[in-house]
Length: 114
Image (cartoon, rainbow, N blue to C red):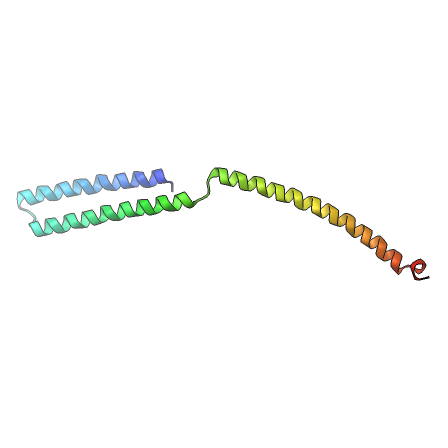
């Protein structure tokens, strides 16, 4: 879920919460709801809006800490360099191993003992 998706959901929530507040005002004016119940409903609505704002801010902060496509591209380049370096080191070690094997064979042979 991207930040744009989250903002779209926040706007949708606002579209639902604002008409609900308007409906409560209409009920209050018609006398179908008490002022205490109206104040309670508005407080609940404000808490929900504040909670949504907090969640959006928290998710923005989390998204800011995630690596970007550029960072992944740089990481891919670095891994390729390490892989190449490892291959060169492996080739060097294999050449050294064959030299050590020849030296060991010579030292173990009869010619070296005499």
